[in-house]
Image (cartoon, rainbow, N blue to C red; front, side, top):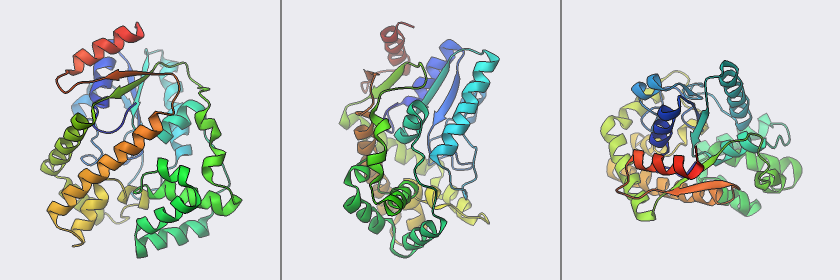
Length: 301
């Protein structure tokens, strides 16, 4: 685990290659088909070399929930264990999904379709920031953990508050229990802030060079369009604004960098609350193999 652009995917691939492992992705955006560049999915060659799960399992027009993720991940774990194919490496930066997989999920009140439609309409008319400010007022603890572009989780948090009169953060105490359902080694990857910001900037440049704008155009042209969750992903939301004429390309690129750094900060806040994590520091001049060597030695595996 670790925040964005820290090298988790490459490290997981290196570790999996050494141990004949399968990889389970823990990422709320990599679940979407055809959203490849902006989510930094592992390339086809990597996914052919090592079996990956929970990538490309939903259409971009669909809503995708934590509950659905945990259910599918549990099925993948059972399938892999049933084949007795060796260890499983789960890799990702979506802290809520990691929490759900390790500790179970807070079911909460049933979805309120009418309220969700009302909140989604509000986003379309006024933008997501207004709803995020509302969440900040009613549940500052949840707002600190939820990225301001994460429409799905913002809507759910407000929905829980409207249904119960209590903030969702008050119901999620199991997310600090440290009582994990799986006997896994937890590995966290850290980098110095300047190094991580440099890697974020390089990633954004690479995404633009690789054709992120064309990817977004293709997704918007699909008959069913993009769900609010998919369209608010960092990288996608800004390019959508660019294509709508709301900002220049230069402004969009800069905003992607800013929002990615904000997202990274939010992730760091989440990960500090995880118990039992073996943290490893990666320097700018480290190779993937050198980091993997330290992980293997540190865990004595």
